[in-house]
Length: 273
Image (tube, rainbow, N blue to C red):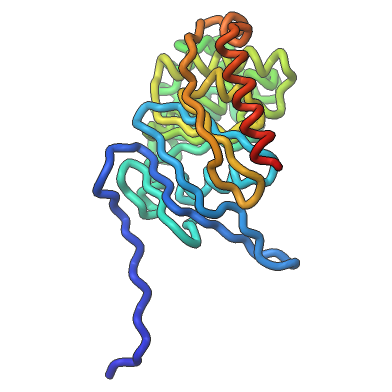
């Protein structure tokens, strides 16, 4: 017997058209609170090509971290669709993404090498084999002498390097970086931006980088998406079409870079009105 009620259509889990590594289409995400539902993002559309570094900037509370959670498969949108590598199910997104949160979350009783190796141990690799596989990355990125150090013996910048190597070792094609240098002082942050740019040149991935720092977004990103205040949506996109020297100082003091930075700041100010 028919009930007269139609079952809701199952969300599509595959993206047929296009070759983008990331597709976010018409996405809305709500959260319950004692004061009522909060709409974090609404009508959010975003794409990223394979191997592209997409930087996302916007005011506090505009849904940047919510976007990363949706991409990582930690949540589903209330409306719209999210695809990673053409797949839209939460399981597929979880399998395709490695997520680096704002805090390094290193285990204090494990060495730097053992902390990085956790990404492989979580996939069932033995501890000894995981550490063996992690050693080449420590050597490649200048961390070999700190491999046996405990987190308490590392500087903030070194801890973030270890956390990033742990993210790389997960072996996922897409990296989601949530304010990875937000807790660092300005000098260390600048050095880490240069280090991360080198690391991504050595080991390219599709990257979504969330940051409050416009200069950081322009230095690291191939493209910058500007979000509006909550509920977040993309209100401007800028292609970073400037020559970037391996030396960060030379890049950020270039007049073309300064002009692009001014455009990005204007877009943020306009979005906030």
